[in-house]
Image (tube, rainbow, N blue to C red; front, side, top):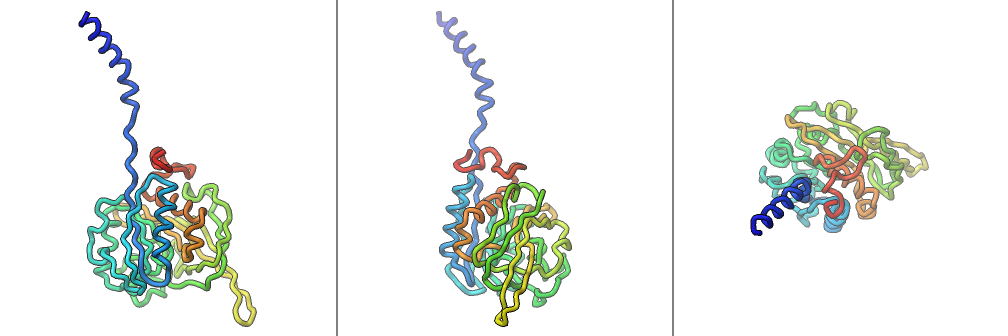
Amino acid sequence: MINRISRRLFAALLLALPALALAAPAAKPLRVLLVTGGCCHDYAAQKDLLKAGLEARAHVVVEHMHTPDKTTKPPLPLHTDANYGKGYDVIIHDECAAAIDDPAALRNVLQPHVDGIPGVNLHCAMHSYRVSKDFRQPLKPGSEGAAWFDYLGLQSSAHGPKEPITITFAQDAGPITRGMAVWVTGNEELYNNVQDPKNYPGHRALATGRQITTAKDGTKREATAVVAWTNEFGPKKTRVFSTTIGHNNETVADARYLDLVTRGLLWAAGKLNADGTPAKGYGPGGK
């Protein structure tokens, strides 16, 4: 009798093994470090808008490295600690540190990305870490002064007034912007491109911004610039996504902006499908 029961249990276990083998463990959420602080922006609000928006759209946990300091030299730990990225899957740079010009500090900031940790860069991050006084002129890629721009895959030095920007997404630019429609922002700053972005071999443009401004004499001026792109950085070809959009809280809270940043983050981490949807296990709630 006992032998018959044992045989039945064994047979049931054999039948169950295929199903058990197919049951994959749930994906762990991506650990994301969001760096905020410095001049000219409402980072106290924007850090929370980004955290809530990203965590609602993807299987991520966003942790803050924030300072309330509003100068162009925000005292952030990453300037002195090259290991600040340890344990994170993606680092988002949203700081405004235009006057941090120490090459040693910049090396610390870049080290996790040199080591292969993907990066996402928002708005004023593009105008940070100006270790060369000639940042308004095209800097030679690979030079010390161009180190931050080599990471970004684009060099920018200034922006226009706060006026609406019409954003047009490139066709067949890949999954980050697939299916995204033309978007006219509220008042935003259009960042310039100091040199042809094609000078950076890892650069791939995703979106272009067009802004029309009116001078005091009534003259209208039109400016265009790349406003979203990807880059491959360093010997490990680390994935980097950047957008210059994101000055005002209204924009940062906009679902279209949060969708763009979420897709850029997932792409950088290698968790974005070709159709622009999160990879399995990395959608909202781990779906």
